Length: 347
Length: 218
Image (cartoon, rainbow over the protein chains, first blue to last red):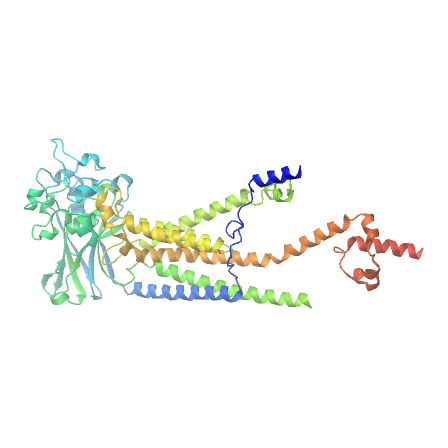
């Protein structure tokens, strides 16, 4: 009887897991001890770091010089003209005067700002064909460009999609009024886009010249010129790799946004930036915004290492820094109180 | 049933009830909102040599800050750090960086431009990512450390009570047969400790002594 039982016990496998540290859940572990010194030091270090970062950010933000001018309200004749789309071929010019009270030293950037224009709309954002913009011969019917894919006679649009179709086509020039003479401020139109956009994401189709590369395609309906005539002076800025086009195709995340338009070229009397004085914008008004109650601005701004005139990050860091330091002091107070209580009980 | 005490926690819904669910839901919602809105307010009207308020940068910043907040929450929650915990946390972060790099690489874009539409994002977005997640985690850091501090204050109290209860239970269950075979309480009585000590620990012995005194007086 006993032999049989022991034999059965031997044939049945044991259900216990192996006696290894991993399977018996006896791995060596480190338990972080929250002693008063570690907690306090971490709070104060974080507090000091955040405070200093916040103060630096606020100081640098305050050193940014910026001026923003709303011109869609000032150019009311042109905006009324553009409300009627049959006037698309009529040119409309508008002048806006402004004065710079102090010099804008350093690199000065000119932006156009749009308000209430939702580039982050769900169907707008996908309305593009990245394969076509790489210069490849693809069937754009398969992309999300609809309804901006082909015309009724079958000619495909280059580039297709709603994003490309709605490109910002105002022309803005800046003039400096010195005594009685008017000087045009030299502006740079290249070097404004991302390197990856210019060299990787957008490529022109290859052929012996650019207009033949786009043979068999037509401009999008809202454009005045076909894509190979966007900048005929510079081959490196023509076609799909035009800087204005690239910047527009990089859609914004918000309904109020600004896009880099031109940079002030630091030559002649603008070597240090823009001197104080009277200036004029001459704008060729093409982009209609009044129908959707949008607004257009021109912004001139200098740049600092932390980005620009948005004070939010500086304030957020300062608030976090003060909160951390205050919490540190509160912990010290509670710790001292507990210490007094403990000594009282022991007596 | 071998260990009925283990099921009491489940019967009383101590680890998961409506209150805990509500608190967890609120915590998750507030973390997500903070992650989104801090990125939004930081990016608004962002001026730079290359404007970075665009859709892709914003999306990557929000995603990275949510991921890093989750990692920080996990780090705060782990009490016993084994080699496995270290490995898993660092591997998560490394995998995130690796896959961000791969999906945003230029080669991936060339293979499938419709799918991998964010080429070359890593160098540009890193500064904004760093700023955004630092603010997000800095906000959660004091809250979680306060929670930990409160927990360490409460811990010492329950353990003393439990032990007293068990001892009382084992004392009261002893039979008279066991009492008669014990060496007796002469030593305890002559020492006089039981008269001065707290009632909760020596309850049956105290009662026995009172009865004994009464009979002696009579």
